[in-house]
Image (tube, rainbow, N blue to C red; front, side):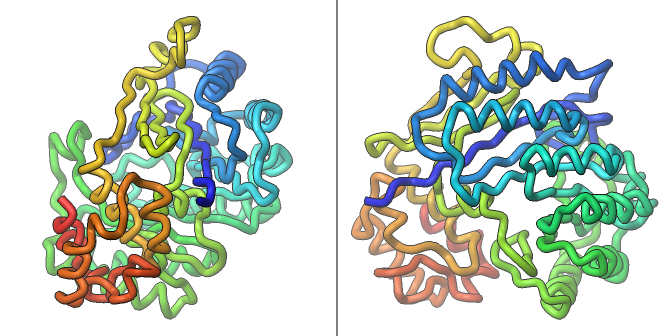
Length: 377
């Protein structure tokens, strides 16, 4: 059996200002980040979780990781590299907010080992950025990408949202045209949704109706394809390499999660364990000193009867699906356990027929993915 690859997610919980649509574990920064203290806790958290496997990829997310200094990122990555072997081609991504860009800082990130940036543009329309609570302008977004390229980054992702308040098809396509014109390797293009415990959920803005959302998606998909981008996941388009870190999630690989509110998944002896860390930065940093991993506030084993849905929810997001062998290598299930459901989906034209070798939706199944996943509940 092939070893399950293991990635590392590192959460930086602070941001300049909480966006009204954001349901991530982020906290508006008051004062300065004590970088030395937080990195010390991150490395202790990693040491408590680490099981000896090489680290396949690293993703530094948030919050706003680009609030960290170049020296802090270097200390963090150096510390990880001293504790664990990194894959020779380890992808190291850092999320960045265009409102926190400085060319010297991004050159320092590059020197520290970061080889991929994910830039949260969201829109190139200033009115939309203001409505979304973003701290940057359209001009600053363009400048941020330019500065990243000048700092030597060739692997850049742009996050762009659609179905924004009052947005029509023309507005959504204009955002995409400007994104494509900057020639990033990767574009994450996803729909704004109103999530519980957000300001938008409490006071919802007027969003495009479902027909307009469909029109935006169809026209935007055609524009991205014409621009040289290939959709490989429900919200991910690439002109170059895919995001290896996210691919590992979707292929049901393992990942350590360190930092306030981080989540991880590890598989040992056929048991899949999910672990989360204390969400509040202060509570997270007060946790040091207890037994086991003192940073963990929850840990649970994924029940066998939940693994089919979990696995498929990730794997079938990929247009090319995954090798069928991943099902037996990365869960406690066999193909025979799911055969009746799989055969039914094949008969309905929602799943490709070669289920002995690959689990993959048909184009129709990809368009009706929620219906496909419901079959595994």
